Image (cartoon, rainbow, N blue to C red):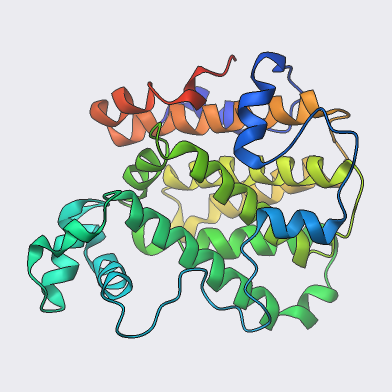
Length: 294
């Protein structure tokens, strides 16, 4: 179980920190140029960070019913509680569909493709949910919309929460960390977009960095939450949004935004080390993200 130190550390992701030495490395993960004084149009930024799929909200990797890779990935999700986020789960998904177990060899990147599939599917489901609740969202305050978006996404973890620390650990591996960071940025942008944010100034970055930190720390809290129906997690989320968003605690420059986001990922990856076991910890320790200073 992650220590209280890790949880407290992750819960303060909106704290302004300095991380000048790693600005270039971290911003490259999110496609941000901290040296550029030009602020892109909001719609252009969204296209850079989010796999928009049109009004119908198709999945980013949605395939035809005959696509064996997508069918195996979908079926493998039924096996993650037994086999975890592993090649074994992919092999089980293949055999369940009548393919030979060696069919998992078509996934050249290994188990992370199952993690990616889950995260992409969740983002697609979230987008559809937000679209279908447009009228409800319009009647909410911005803070309430953010809470709704984050909670809706986190509720998708409930069926796999027992094994998700392993999935997070895989996402934190050196070869996977950049893609994981981008997916977190995509999620944050999606929620802010449906919360009504149309900013085209520097606040575009600060809002998304802060929400990414709130999501990551709440996800970590959820993995340790033993309360009924994750009651404590939702209270934690409410507090984080109220304290950080409603009080307007926004960093004032790119150094602060990058530092805040990097310490957030470092905190989550460190906590995942405790949750996922020694082997995952050894692998995560080699991640470029884990080298960011405290």
